[in-house]
Length: 247
Image (cartoon, rainbow, N blue to C red):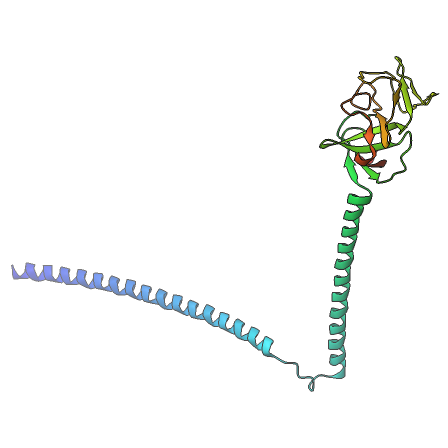
């Protein structure tokens, strides 16, 4: 019996030794890992401190001109001159661009408005969606294409007669102004279209009698809804198309 007990004790002791050995190994591994992590953290912290210290040193570092050679001093002066010249050119370029943009805005708003043709009533000459440049002028004559305000819309039409003139349109669509037959090479089809004014029609003072190049569309001076266009409503005379380019 005693022999059996001693054998059991030996086995138990052996197992205890093995378990304790394993525990020691795992504890050592954890300790090593912890110490390595701490070292890494310390190294990164030291690196950051070194960088910040270097930056501070560079900031606080002053050039010792006594230790510089003449060539080095010349190089430093040239660098300073170049930087100053570069900044002057940059400032002047920015100021120039601002001035050009301001002038362009003033011209586009007050002198030469840029407009979009919103209807197809002037097709063959200007199509819907075309971007055109106009000019503000009081010298508007027969045949000019003008842009004008009608309510909250901008319309584009052709001037057929100026103030005081007498206009007649016959059933075939021929236009007579002050007894003279008007040549209209820009028309595809001549027609009197729908109208609700009486001919002969006299253009009121300070106004223009305007028609579409597409005469089938009667939304022009033939219709009382628009009538003659007052000079005060005129935006400007259309000069040319800028978009689309190929036309």
